[in-house]
Image 1 (spheres, rainbow, N blue to C red):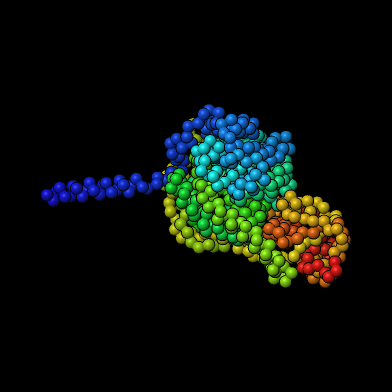
Image 2: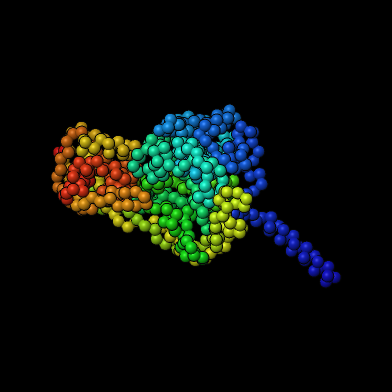
Length: 570
């Protein structure tokens, strides 16, 4: 009898264990992906990666052909041509809506927010381009049609069209040996498009800015690839960290959206994802988890960081470099799909947060600028957000794939289940370090038309005065102009100080930038002479400063006036 009871108990325990196991999500590590995860599709809707068993990636002509095939299979698709590149290639953005949306006006009338997804800003990091095509296919053909009940999704799989079509044989420098052939990082002028967000010196940057200005996405995502790393995550994510940006959207991303989407990605796709950072190198266990180590600085030069200055949501994703191309595509696809489902379910809440940020930006200017009490951040740094647990591998060693000349990963490194490292310092909290007074307006003289147009390119309202103005405020007196090497660029740096001016007259035809507008945070950051990487830093003012003699003599007045108040009778 006792034996029977014992046997029955063992059967019961085994059943309970099986039931518990059935409810546990399987996690896929290293190169693992679920069998058949991409689904079964007609040949003309397969991506280049799928057709070549994940050894090749898409070209621009192949993208256009694929979009044409998608349009034949769906009534939800419209295509916007963002720009024509210096090499005469068109960069398409796919607009997917139900019903079909063909203009920004229709999008606004629908009441649905726009989500914009970008790939191939750096063509060697092509997993996002391939994943975004799969996401577009899902949305347009109805696999994830519920998302379109609440969202309009714009997808630009290939942003850097010229770099994408400058194909080179892969050398494995980013970690994996596939795809075997891919594009180069820079555009056809040799410029990094993810360093152009402030200066807008490229055709591509201006084309993207025009598209964002007209469609006004609630959320913008930019997909990337890291190089060989020691962390154990399938994908990593980050948001705007420029301290001058409105805190409301950033705090929501960090405190609410990111944890929720991380959990969704785990449960729905079996992947562990975490914040975009890197651990302390050449040591195990790592001591710190740092944005700085991942080259994610507090500067606005990155498209995602700059977009946050618009009071909108923005995300960068970065997969590790060493897994297979299929795994990296799956990681991007999984995260973006979970993200879209989350945003669709919380669209109204997120729209309210953005509107509150816009309203508060204007209200703060009206309440504090003339009083001289409103300040914002010129610079910042990352500080500790506390201690966290991090998934990490002890080793990740490059090695030639046996029998080939392809660089891959040494067997037994960066594979299997990573270790959990406890009490790692989370250095991802952006904290402002220097501030300046936010004025009621900025005034520029009539010879600053190029600066006014640059501001307008960023969606900032600039008016031309129709009569002379007498104003009170501050002007910056330049002591020295220096070029400081930073992250590969010679940034312009001004030393000096502000002085109060009781009365200054500007003639009719001057450019007036009223700060009581939602783009006030961006305007402040771009125009302040000592911002970390505003217009001064990125050489936008260099010709004007040269003509004034800055760098050759002291006492030169910076050619942007900070207005505290209009004088009576002006």
